[in-house]
Length: 396
Image (tube, rainbow, N blue to C red):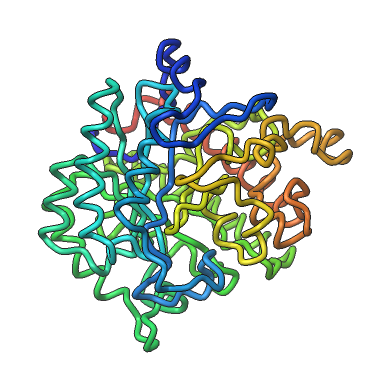
C-alpha cells in the first residue's frame, strides 16, 4: 500500500544534519552561543487557524481566538526554519487547527513554496493533515492526491457516538455528512485513515463503533482514549481494556478474511520504549497562527501553557533554554517511574499538566492506560504468530 499514513523513521544524513546545526541565517532564527541544545528537525506542525466549523467538547485547543489565522509570511518563515534545521533527507509537515480546511487557500500557497524549498535542499516532504472531513470537496481531494497528502479523518464511531461530541456550533451532528463523503474520498485515496477517540460515555459501544467505522470503508484506525482534566474511573478503564481486546480479536478476524486494515498498536511488539519522555521539542516543533513556537500542538492548545512552553517565534528566534528540559527528560523521571517494571514513555506532556500539574509526572490514569495497551499488544502479538504458523488463513 503506497498510501498508508504509516510513517517510517527517516535515516539520518550526516551532511544534512551538519547544515541543521549551523546558525539560521536565512530565517533570522539564531542559535545563541553557550547553549548546549540544538534542534535537528524532522517534523513541524502548522496550526493554520484556531477557528473550526465544529464545537467538539473534548478539543485540546482551549480558549483560543477563532479569528487567529496564519499568514503566508508566517507560513513561509516556518518552512524556512524547518528546511534550515532539517537533519534528515525526509521531513514531515502536518497541517492542523482548528479545522485546517478552513484555510485551504493558504494550503495551496504553502505546499508549492515548501516543495520548491525542499527541492533546493534535496529534501523530501511527507505531507499530513488532520481534519474532521466535513469540508472536503472534489477539488480539495484532487489537490491532495496531486501532492501525496496523507489525511487522517476524525471519526469516533457510529452516528450515536460520533454525534455525541462532534457537532456543529448549532448542535447538529456530523456523522451522516462525513459518511456520505467517504465514497468520494475513496475515489481519490486507496487507503483511508481515521482516528477513533473514545470517551468514557462511549466505552460500552466501542466494539460496535469500530465495526461501523470499518463498514464505512476505513482501512487504518488509530484508537485512543480522550484524556484531559476530567479523569477516567478505574471501572471505566477496565471496560475500555476489555473492549479494546475484543476489537483486537475482530481486527485479526478481518485480516484473516483478507480485509485491507491496519492498526499500529495491534502490530507492535510489547517491548519497552528506548527513551523515557515524549518526543516533543526533540526533533519537531509546532507553530501557532501568529508564528509562536511550541514543542507540540497540545501544549500550544492549553491556555495556561502559553507563556511557560512558548519557545520562540519564527520571525525572531528560538529560546533554546526553554527546550533544554526536553532534551534529557530522564533526569525529570519521578522516582516511582524509575522503579516501575512497566516501562513507558511518561505520557503526554499536555495531559500530564492537566491531570497532575507537572508535565513530567504521569497520572495513575495514564499508567493504567499504558498497562492496557501493552497487554493488548502482547496478546495481539501472540495471535499474529499463532495465525501465521497454522497455515489455515487465506493469503494476505
